[in-house]
Length: 105
Image (cartoon, rainbow, N blue to C red; front, side, top):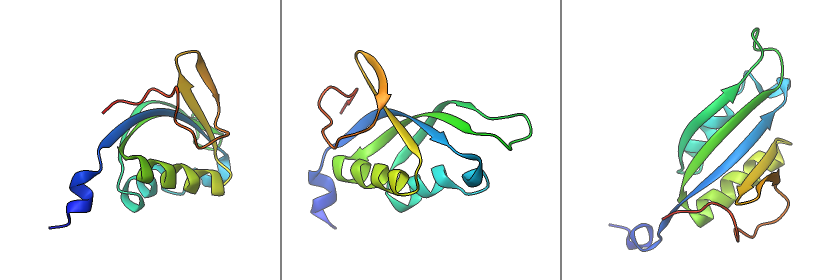
């Protein structure tokens, strides 16, 4: 058994995504969960009726801090806007410091 996985505490973080139309047929959220070992809970979503417009998703990500960082890097590398939630509201993600984010765990 790998004790490294047991020793790292899991965190929960709340983010929002803006996914442009060119990615709406790609399983971005599935890939986020499966490739980065994250539990992803979609708390709300907004898509155009025909599915041909931008998509907005509010997510709770659960995993180790490293897994969360790697997952967010994946999203940013694709050019997907990631918005962080803190006690003051939402703002575009622009740093790797989780200070002030709604982290639990």
